[in-house]
Length: 333
Ligand code: ASP
Image (cartoon, rainbow, N blue to C red; front, side, top):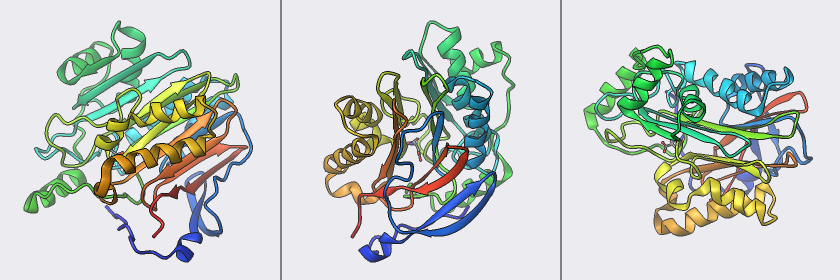
C-alpha cells in the first residue's frame, strides 16, 4: 500500500497551491487549485459527502438519492461499495488486521429521527454497515459487539466470510518483523469511510465504517462506531463524521461537538475548525503525531471540512458533479 509522508516543514507558499483531484466516475485527473476555501460555497441539495477519495461510493449514494431513495439508504449503499472493495485496506473485506492477525470491523449508522445502530469488533461479516442498520431497526438495542453481533448477523441472513485477503496477510506478516505500533498519519487513497447525505426531502443521515487502526490491540474499538464521536446527526441542524486517530476523536466527542457548534450558529467549516482546534489544544505537544479529519454538512446543504495535517481529502457529489477536494488543515508551518 502506498502511503504519503506528512511534510512537516512545508512553506506557506507551497501550501497555498494544492493539487486537487477532480473525479468523475472512477477517473481522476489532477489540476492546480489556488485556495483551500471550501469548494461548494452555495447550499445544495441533494448532497453526498464522504471522507477520502471514494468516487464509486459517493456515486452509488447519489444514484440512490436520484431514485428518490432516502438519505439513510444512500449512506448505507455508499458505504457498502467500500466495504466490498478488497483494495481498500481500512474498510470491510481486505482491511488490515489487529496485531494478532484478526480483522475486526466497526460501523454505525444514524437516521433523520435520531435513531442509531452500531456494531463493534465483528470478525466475519463484510457489510457491517448493513448489520449496524439491522441493529437499529430490528433490535431493542443500539450497540452489539463481537460474537453476539455475529450471531445476530447470521440469524438475519448475513454470510460468514473470511475477510483477511492475501495482501492484508502479507502486510501483517511484514509488520510482525518489527512489530512497531505506529499509526501512519495519512493514507493516500483510502481510510475509514464516513458519509453524510441529504435527500430530496432535505432529511439528513450518516454512516461510518472501518477496520480501525491497523495492528491495534485485540479488542480495541475507536471512534468510528461510537455515537457522537465518529458520527452524529441531528436532522434539525446537520451532521458530522470523523476519520483519523480514534482515541483523540473520542476524547472530544468531536462529531457531536461540531453539530452543537452548528446549532449555535457556526457554519460547517467554522465548526470543523473549532473542533479540530479543541483536539489540538487537549493533546498538547502530542498533536503533531496524529491526524484527525472532520467533514460536516448543515441543514441548508452547506459543507465544511478540516483536519490537523495536510493531505486529508473528501469527496462531494452535488450539482451532478462528483469531485474530490483537499481539506484545509491546521498545521501550516
Ligand atoms: N478513526 C478510525 C479508528 O480510530 C481509524 C481511521 O479513521 O483511520 O478506528
